[in-house]
Every structure is written in structure tokens, then in C-alpha cells.
Image 1 (cartoon, helix red, strand yellow):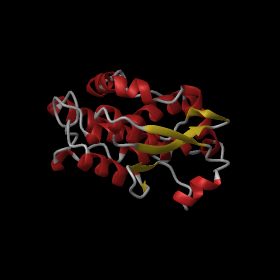
Image 2 (cartoon, one colour):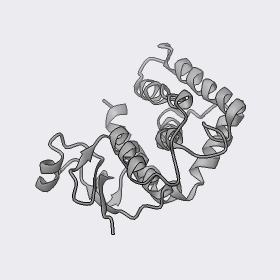
Image 3 (cartoon, helix red, strand yellow):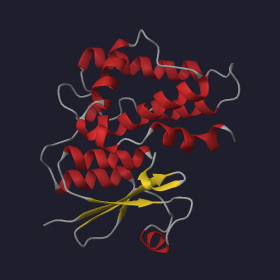
Image 4 (spheres, helix red, strand yellow):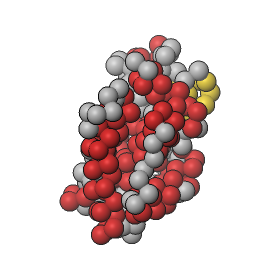
Length: 214
């Protein structure tokens, strides 16, 4: 029996509860979609245990280990490894769709942490969300069509953070007219894999508060 171990972020101030790291959730989503059994280890990122720093010297989550192989860092590398080891069901995204939505997360972070309402960061985010909405209109319901794929599992946790944090810190929500994007978020947030791996709203807010208030 294969053993997969994965270290992910614990909630801020609550080390026994799954935390708010979108990169950790991406890995968990991949394992869940492929129905791979795994053992989850929650890491208190403000007080990292010694054993964890031995396997992840930079102290970053997620890290994953299959069988007796080495611990692997970086969600890009980890999800690729999972795909190679467990090819069914395939989550491979066609290359032409692999970068769809990739600018949304940095645009979100810039707008969220912006102290200047005139710096264009809000419009830059709306532009990126509009591009995704247009893509979904033409190719949806998922980014690569009928089936969920790796690009969705990368983007979904980031959209979840965006929705929660911008509502909480900015009183902002995704424009109503982006109907395809709204439908997509509803679709992906209701998947069983997402419901099982999502952090609680208050932990997402707590996780971002230091950046917003910096």
C-alpha cells in the first residue's frame, strides 16, 4: 500500500485545524480528485517543529512524500509528481490553457494590500477576472472544457481567498456582470474535493490580516 504524507499549513492560532494556504489546498485537491489516500500533517508555521525544518529547510509548506522517496517541496513540482505517479483520472491541462487565470492571484494581492484607491490595482484585477470570464464563456464550464483539470485546482483556492478577503477588507465583490466566472466559482467551490479541503473563512481572514495591515 502506497503511503503519501503531506505537510500543510495549520490555521493561525489553531494548530489542530487546516489552515489557509492556497498552495497546500491545491495539493490536497489534487490528491482528493485522484482518490489517493494520504496522511496530512498540520504545520504551525509560526512555531515550526524541528523535524519539519529538517525535511523542509526553508520552512515552506506544502511538502509531500510518496512511499520512501524524498520529501518534495513546491506545489508545482508536487502536483506534477502526483500526476505522474497516479495518472488516473488524468488532471492534465492542455498546454494552451495552462496559464489561463495565472495573473489573477498577483493582481488580487496588489489590490488587497493597496492603500491608494487611485493606483489602478482594482481595475487591473477586474481586467484579469474579465479575461477569465470571457474564456469560460467560450470554453467552460471548467477552464479546459467539460472536465476539471490541474489549472482549475491551482486557481480555485486563490479565487476562494479573493472572494473572502476582498469582501472582508475592502467591501468588494466580483462584478455581477461576470456571470460565467460566478457560475464557475459556484461550480468549483461545491465540488466534494473542495468542500473537504477548504479552510474556514475566519482562518483565511486571519492569515491575510498581517499583510493587509502592514
